[in-house]
Image (tube, rainbow, N blue to C red; front, top):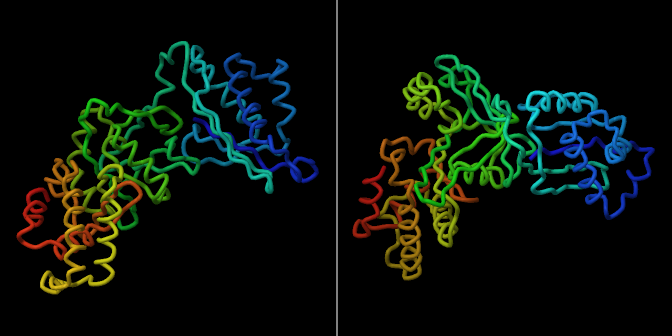
Length: 364
């Protein structure tokens, strides 16, 4: 999906002050004409439909389209058309069909965003130019994923940048750790990476979607399935040897536990309350004689057990100890907490007889 951004309507244009209620529908219809012109290779905009589109393009039009890769300077309409034309020449057999179309319109400022999710038709680009291709990675460097500012929870867009030395204090990034989903329904899902289609494991797509919707998209993320070119054996082996260093020097190691369920809010709320009320309390400090506290503890124990039953805690990542207490973070849907807070809640809300200590020790 390519978001198409229009510059603010010029002040002397009446529609800037009093846009009709059908502005969104009109913008979506006009934007779809771009795909029609592309499929017809009408980059001179000679057809009647294309002429209608051109009449609505402001002389001040500036575009920022994330299929161009990392953020660039806003470009003019002529520059954007030239970019589309070049891509059509690279892949002459590729045409597009719009699957979904939506928009965000701020009529007061005169600024709008139109989102189009598209699929290619009539074959693929034989040279592979519509698919993402890795660039050479210097030895000792790593790649990190950054979200495009136009990314949405439904349509994941971003780009890769290289960090020459992840151990430097000036290198800031987070590691996204996950457990591969081996269910039959877990089909890979596509994101847009550096302006090209890129397929990722289903759990990674949902993790990125949750981050886009609820968490920080301004950070850089190291993700095994995205950051490493697994098709290059030499790079894969070299990067695999760097994994302990990458995780040790990350600002945070995020453990994606999966989407939230009915017990997620309970356990994360319990973690937060315990961390705020008694951050250094020991098990002996708990008031086991308070009936209400015992009832709450039972609920917490059930929620903690539910969390520990998630596949991540039994994954290879957890077993090799990549989830340190000092910079580990649990991520579950919209909820997150520090690993230290989770361990504190686990230690102070469950007794030895509960078996939780043993369960945690067996997987971490």
